[in-house]
Length: 337
Image (cartoon, rainbow, N blue to C red):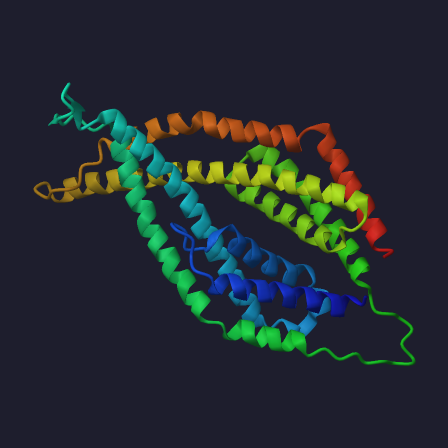
């Protein structure tokens, strides 16, 4: 099938899925309507970029900007939910450990307040900070979701497809297989380089880049996954992507702790400057928050290490290179479809 016709049909199908997910009620505790909504947003955004040569002017610039903004806010909100979920769980555990009373032999509770630990104070402070950020993300996402004009225009443009036949045209149009193979080769090349970077740094932006490239591999393979060898690679790609997502979530939690530390450091400095300039002024006490964040980081260290070890076992093992080599071979084979 010609690349232009196939990519239009695929993109229209994804837009229909996105419309269904957008109209569905939000899942409890998640403004993003669950994993399916976020996955579809990311796939529409990636697909319009991967197939840009075939789609051409059918994707207006305003729709491209809208898709980028929607994907950015959906992913930011997902990351925020991961961070909040961990901090809230820690706060509940620490609250239970502190205890505000004990049971008597007759089942009655005697209130006996105990000192709140530094880790509990830090968890409460950080959860409030993340909750405020979540509210901003939700508002921005709601505004984007309510503005459906660019998507309606995009759907209309994609639905209008005409084929011009030129008898003197010596260059046949590219097939969907050729376009897919070319994009897969480019993506695998970028994935090799990005893997080397994330192995050396292990930071969140590099891990996110690798995960997005792995998303692209999955998106490119799924429409052409009928052959058994392609299905096998697709299953492997899904597993590797899941490992990457787990590492990305763990690094997001670590990033929240470090961002909290930066904020506390800035507030400490501001308080010191304020005290120097206005000795009689009062300022919020922060002495417990910094050490509490360090305690939270120490609590999270083993969980982060497990995610890093799982990533290294999956992606830095010799068979990972074999997987990438197999993707290159499949890309060449797809080009002949």
